[in-house]
Length: 122
Image (cartoon, rainbow, N blue to C red; front, side, top):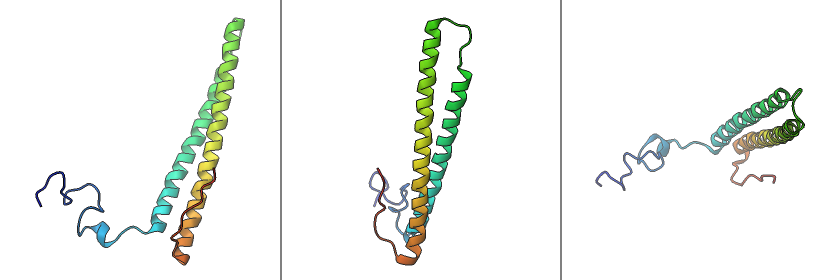
């Protein structure tokens, strides 16, 4: 088969390559779940960091001795930052919970031969 659009030999996708490592030693579901949980943990940490930055910005944006219009604008900005902080914390908690569920599913695949789907809370 000539190398070009349809060639699987030099594909970036290991599942398309024939006889490669991925064909002989495919990753186990439990390894994939653990890797996914690790990525979710990183995302949860980023959410926590973002929430902290929103909280810092709220404290740093307090106006002193300025016009009533500027105080109103600063109050609105503080409210918006508080909402973003709360959103980031909720998202971080939900992401961390999902990471825990993936880790539990990864452990259960070892003993039960897991073939089902994970139920994700809304």
